[in-house]
Length: 366
Image (cartoon, rainbow, N blue to C red):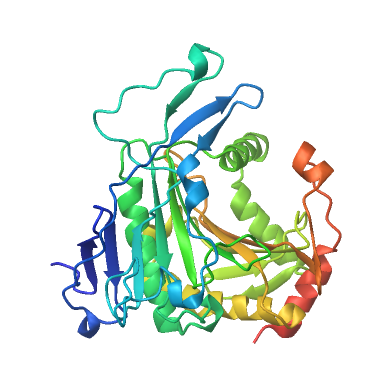
């Protein structure tokens, strides 16, 4: 049986767009994209840093992406009153579409192997195959995820499930990462409430580190590192912010950021498609509550990155789906800048006691 609360369409330059609806009564045939868009030119390549052994995405065309437009020119608002945007419909609930300025994209079938940079074997290079999508949370330009009702959050979770399953199936994709950048202090280029979904054609360095840690912990103790962290945090209790039937939120003991919050499911779940209906329903209630507490922490909207880490290919049974939310705000009116030690040497220095953050979050949680 087809899903009538999900309607796919195609933009003028061939990019895929999918409407997700809160209920089937809102699902209608999508209008066409009438913009005279130029052909896509996804000039993306991966270059390997020989010192770190890491791949870097070189995406020169992203330097021309839309940057902090006025609300009247927002590309994520619906197409209304003769103004055409990235979303052809005059209204919508949730929309996912291929990013017009991606960091990764599937190259044309006939694209030749670029070979190493300057012909030097030390500087390996390959196409930046993968996919980047935008996920608009609401047609309301001035809204926020924290202000969404549980019904809408359920639709967003449904979109995360849908896109995770679809993107994970693409050839070469190693991990799917759903995230939201919020606030000018974080560096957002669009203020409309939205997130992004990256389908990485590589194993991200952060994930590789976590996999190494889980393997070492398993060999040393025989235990599941994610389960043992959750048990240790709940046993201590000093940094736990919220505990539900299926989810627990806590500030990590060794938080890197002055404001950091993690949300773990209670059982081993590798990715969004594995969540039960009960787990999705509780998440739809818990997540907005946590985001509202984030905004009440300083009494102003908190700039943050909220990233959903999912199991990479081949580690579905050992890597647990979880949220890591952090902010660069270290005090009211003060930001944490990643300077010499953090940026230069990846040695983190946190100015705020994690237990203090957890205590304050418990105070403002509603």
